[in-house]
Length: 69
Image (tube, rainbow, N blue to C red; front, side, top):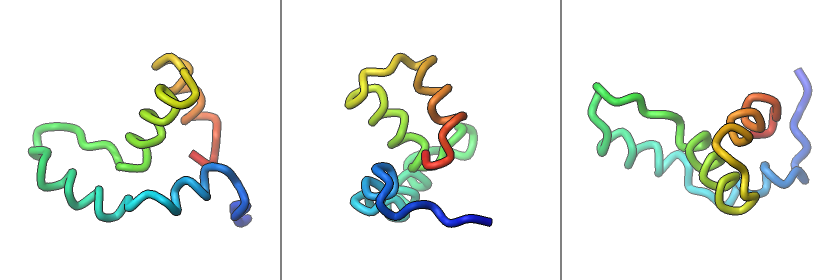
């Protein structure tokens, strides 16, 4: 399998985010009855909505189609 480009915008953003730490925080805050999406996916959705101005529908398509997300 290939390697992701370390200069990619999304790879650089991910390096700035403490995602493993956030996973632990989320696991404590959400009960087992609630679907807890990975922190990376939640961050990407929020980033797309706020920074890129995408609608929820466009956001889902971007996450589905972009291997870097």
